[in-house]
Each structure stands twice: as structure tokens, then as C-alpha cells.
Length: 508
Image 1 (cartoon, rainbow, N blue to C red):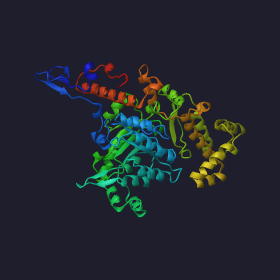
Image 2: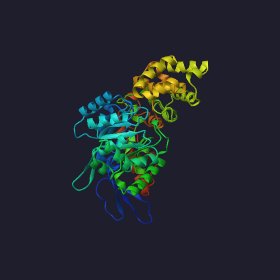
Image 3: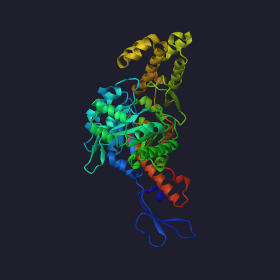
Image 4: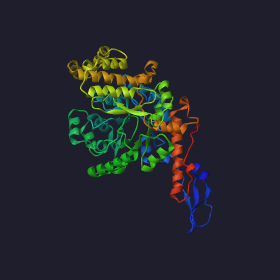
């Protein structure tokens, strides 16, 4: 039985005879002969997900190394993901356009033309009008064929434009995508517009503006905006803290509704699962739910390829499952949106919540008590007026209307300065600023703690031994073994609990 579980690529021969419990006859080899003997087929990591997904994206494994914004998912991380025959997304969200362009160039220079399983991140940017369109323009110009769209609460014209400009009709009538949108969502009502063709009005307006052609609009009206839907359950960063099984089931029902409403083939819309995936058991469970692919995040943030500083990676490597907290999001501070961050070793979450409490109460810096003003200055590391001067200069460039409002609205000024502090927390963590360790913003979910528990005492425990490829292969191999153990159990074989385990090792 141990060999059967540890050799998932081998066929297992089982004996089923009336009045007897099923039993294992042999592992591997030819049919052992006799009546009532059946083959339990092999399990390969490559087969755990949707084969159509692998074909569409040129990957060997149904495993995505997810984008982590502001360059945490570096070009190097993407390159290593592709070389491991997985799919990788560059964490381009929040980066200047020139830096995004350089990152894309670095990825392309390191890969061969047939290594296409990579893309970049497009994040919804309501606080920066025009940014989303500029990033899409850059992706189209640079030939980025895969985009992970995150933090979207509604469908936007630029996402539709990206999809429509990549549609082609084959001679046999099939519509093929050259531009692929991976819509990362955590609610069915947000997912359904991505699972549906774009609204007719939006397509008409794009045609009228000369952004797409009438023929492209016609094709777009016949397919879903996205063929890949990434269900983001409880995770680091932006999250609704949704349980994975509940979310996946909800999105599956939404897919059925959307396909029926618009006359689409339900099989053309693939749902992957992200959030909470850090051990072989969780990855195997995701595929058992029906996930076409899995996407990992936090566990890659602690790798040597990550854009996070070594100081930040060391903090992550010590985290337990409970060492996380919710904190205000820098990009949606006023709306009360939160992100999940590392709590252990920092004060960021507590300080961010206190700043949001001041804002929510309607206060301005000037109306705070003397002790509260001193606390704010201490957290900022400079007088409020100095912080506001720097904030004003930036906001006047990206959103002049918001800057003008803040000149006469003290509560708005406080919010903008707080947003700057929250943004800097992520920057300090990336740089490893030793003077601001308590203010590090490190996006992290409970799965990071589960990963640390799993790798304790193994070659992957040291923070400097953690690499994207090794983590991916260990999770996939372990998931295949968990699936084999489940396969045996489902066949009526009593499988001991200790065989539902897999210790990390270094793959050559």
C-alpha cells in the first residue's frame, strides 16, 4: 500500500471478489491474471487539472504562480515559473509604466518564443483615472497575451477592449483568443459579467470611439470576456476571506447561469482556485473540487525570486496560521476596503486601523487632540504638514480634482496622507528599511503559516532555500500522492492516515 501511494504514476492492480474486501495485488507491471482483477490508472500531476487549460496556455502543469502587486512577483519569478513549465504572472500593478515595460522586456529576453505561459497584472485603479487604459495600451503594444485582472468590482471598457482586440475567427467558424483575461474574483456577482459577453452598449461605445472595429465587437458579443476565472478565496492582500469550497461552488453555479443566459458552452469557461493553497492537501482538495488550475501567492512571496526584501522574507518564514490581520487598503482607503497582511513582527495593521478610525470619525489632523496628533506624527515619521506637502505633489499629478478638494477638506487631507503611509509600508518591506520594520506591509494569508508548518525540518525550511520551482513541484507531486491515496480509499481500500502525507524534498 505504501508503494501504491508513493508511486502514483504506476498502475495499481486491485482484486474485487464477492464477499471479500478489496485488496492490492501489485503495483506496476502487467495484469497479474485471474478473475475480478481491475486496474487503478496512474495519476500524474499534469493530469490533475483541465487539459484544455494547458493547451490554451502552453504549460505542462495546471499551476499558476500568481501576480503579487508592485513587483513582488518579479520578472525573475515569472521566468522561473515558465521554466518549471507552469504559468507565471508579473506583479506589474502599481508600478510606473517604464518599469513595467522593462520588466516585460526582461521576461521576453530570458524566454524562447515558444515559452508563452506568462502574463502580467492589470489592477483596477479608480483612484488614478487613465492608468488602467495606459497599462492596457502598453500590454497591447508589447504583445502581452495574458492578463490577470484583479480588484475589479465591475467590468470596464479597457478590459473589454483588451479581449476584443485579440479575437479572430477561424475558417471553420471557431472564435480563437489571442489575448487571455484571467479574472480574479471573490463574488459571483462580480464574476458573472466576466463569464458573459460584454454589454452591447459598451461595445457600441468602443466602436464609436475607434478603440475596436465593428467586426471585433461582433466577435466579442459571441464569447465571454474571460475564459479563465480565478476564484480568490481567503488570501493575502485584497480578500473577502471567503472559504474556498463555498466560493468555488458559488462560481460554478454562476458559470452555469451565465452560459445558459447567453448560449455559451460552459466548458469554454474555466474556473481556477486561489487562496489558502500552501500544502499538498489543499492543492489536491482544489482539484477534487473541480478546479481547472490552482494559483499560489503568499508561498512564492517568501522565495528568493520574490521582490520582497530578505528582512521581509525572514518574517514570512516565521509566520504561523494565526499571524495575520486585516488592515486598510492603500488604494481604497476611503471605501473601507481591507487587505490581509502579516501581523507577526509588525504594527502595520494596528496603526492602519487607527488611522482609518480617525478618518471614519470625520476628523482632520487639525481637529485631533494633541496626543493624537503626536501619535500620527510618530507613525508617519515626520510632521503631518511635511507628509501632506509630499502627498499633495503626487496627487496633483495623478488626480488634480482630488488634490483640489483636499485643500479645503481636512478629512480628505488626512485620508490622503494615511494612504501615503499605507503605500509606503509596502515599499519599506520591499526595500527592507531597517528603521521601519514595525511599519512593513506584507500581504499574507493564513496559508503562509500552514506552509511553514509543512516544511519545518525539511530542505525547504530555510528562507534562502525556498525557490518558486521547488515549491511548485513539491506541491504538485504531493497533490498527486494525496489523490492516489484518495483513489485507493474510494475503491474500498482502508488507507492509513499516515499515508496522507508528503515531505518536501529537492527536485533535480
